[in-house]
Image (cartoon, rainbow, N blue to C red; front, side, top):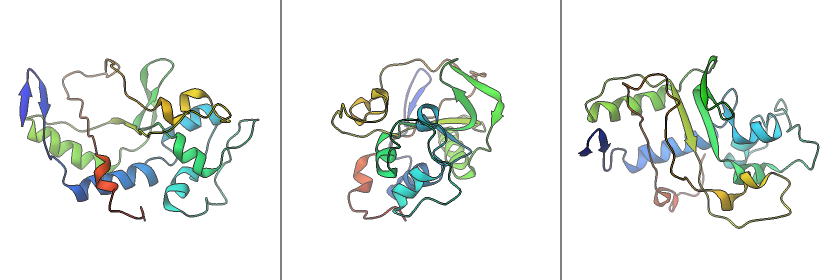
Length: 189
């Protein structure tokens, strides 16, 4: 562990199997309602169509189709344009705040890992909210039926300040998975 004035770097904190399991959950479980994604914000509820894409199965009949009046993106297009999912207390991107009124149960699997990582850094806490960011490489498609902000070419994290948290005595835990964990995997299911 490396520590610099409150900043801790835990190298190899999650082994490859834990990273793989977390990546699968992020794409196939956490991207489903009642959690919110960037696609819900721009297109209306997309139901389980994103998860269905990553699992290679048809979306359930009960899934709400996007409400955008323009062409409805395919599940594959939706999957390639997924940028974020909110867990626990839902983040309002317009107001830059977490909503106390909109809360989804925080996933136990992720809570256990963040708790363990916090303990490794000497902190004790219970995670209440998370923003999962999805990054992809791609090329700009000007004919895309979704806003440019959803384009894979715009998939980068820029410098920012995490200042919307209610309590600043608990840490912000950031987990990064490397694409190398996916190289030898053929399927998410």
